Image (cartoon, rainbow, N blue to C red; front, side, top):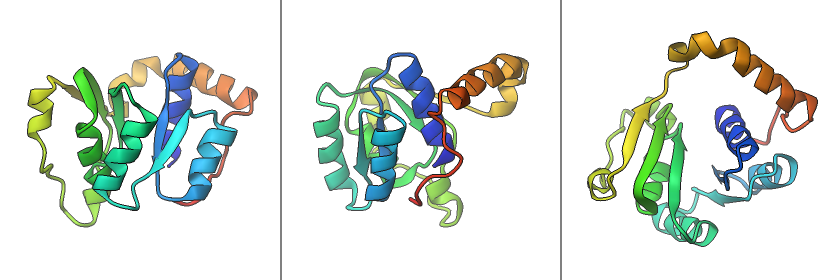
Length: 151
């Protein structure tokens, strides 16, 4: 979505390898062709397929995960995190309507010694001017798009 695609662009600007988790081929194409993501994998085929796709896209594992969805995406990512990985937890949209927000493999956070931090934009109001400048840079370089394909 809009938040994840922006987070991925900011990570790319800082030199990260970025893999998007998407729900359609059109969104995958948009992320890789238009926004410069290194890859995109689909959550639509379920957790087992997503884990395999993540392992193929990130053969050395995952060090950082921006989580805005929860659900099957997070369950899969927890299986490919490296020791000492970090998660920025921004949302759990997959559970807002269903109410299902628990993780069945929660223990992976312990086993991999993962650091999880909640990310609420109101905590960063003091940085809004520098953030606006960085977002303006994205817009000026035509990497940011006003609309994207669904899912």
